[in-house]
Image (tube, rainbow, N blue to C red):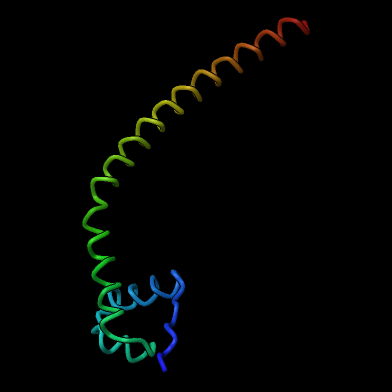
Length: 96
């Protein structure tokens, strides 16, 4: 009779990988603590490392996009502040 496969949630997988990467414990040690197969955990860690090496380009693009967006928002904020000041001056003149 075949054994039923266990399914692990994404949060569990991410947590297990984080334990290996952040604590410096070995894969077999963490796998034993969590009660999972060490080859399963090793494949999760391997996938996570590959994903991290692919991300720096994405991070650079994201940083560039956010920097441009930040500059545009600062410019808009400055213009809105000037418009507000003009309206305040107009109200003062209109009240007098």
